[in-house]
Amino acid sequence: MKKKFTIRDIAVEAGVSPATVSLVLNGKGEISTETRTRVLEAVAQLEYVPRLSKSVVETVETLRFLKIAKHGHTVNRDHSVFISDYIDGMSAEASKRKYKLEVVSFEGQPISIIAESLAGAPVSGVIALGTELSEQDIRLIQANGLPTVFIDTFYDVVDANFVDMNNEDAVYKVLSRFRDSGFGRIGFIASYVETTNFKLRRDAFFKNMTRLGLKTRDNDVLSIESTYDGAYNDMIELLRSGIDLAPCYFCTNDVIAYGVIRALREFKIRIPQDVSIIGFDNLPQSSTMEPSLTTIEVSKRKIGNLAVAVLDDIIKSSDRQPPVKVLVGAELIARSSDAPPVDPSTKAKARSKNTTPVIQA
Image 1: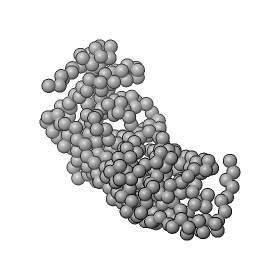
Image 2: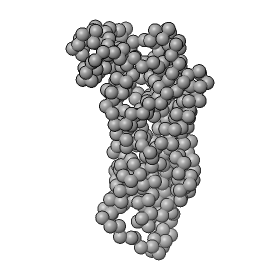
Image 3: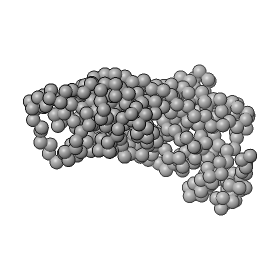
């Protein structure tokens, strides 16, 4: 049986008094940020999870959504639509279950400060946007003992509650479409920006290429920035270097796809005649751009709904519950940015009518 640690154990681990631990956990006292962080790290390390008393749970009717932009490469204006969809889903389910939803935004602040803001907070539970969070960040946020669910991220071996998209299922749908269209050589445009979903999609690409009997070429896996301007600039540099383009690419998300398509078009590379592109997220611009973007749709509202439902079950349970990990399936939205491969001779004739522009450095 797993040992249940006490406040005294935390005090020993953090090198402080039990009274200091109690003050930190209750959000009281003039405790330095350094000491609070040390205590919270000890709480996370020992997996100490204090429970709210039943009377407190019954009188608190607020859920807090933490919108966290740790580095801002993926939680930014480019992605504001899908965050709004998360909030819409949470708000609808919270109202149905008689909760008030409170949204608190953090941009570029240390995770320890965010965790500290939860100490003694008058809320019954927390939903945290985990897009840019590390495993240690998740443990720190959990340390205050409030029932917590993380969305838009997923860790197999972390004892926490997650509601995320099924990245492996989604990537399988993308690669199956390319294969069924007749492509044998499939490229992947990843990002070097650190987010769990980006890593999961990268892992899923290699795993599903093998599953579908397709060979991966190292040169066909590119890594670029995740913002629109960053993706465009990085792709321009790759094109200037004379990269041997694959006939089709799966882009880690729609914003990256937008930047890549802009760069390709400046080099007179036609979409989809020369290169087919599929994105991920189904942002509104994907249906209106030219050509319209084939992409993956995962219901963000459904993820928001489920996050509140899971959190409500935890709050109302009288016993400590095992971690809940929910993955929501994906749908491929077929549009105009991908098509079966064109005969090489036909492609060569079409390209001879165009001249590659000189892009100024």
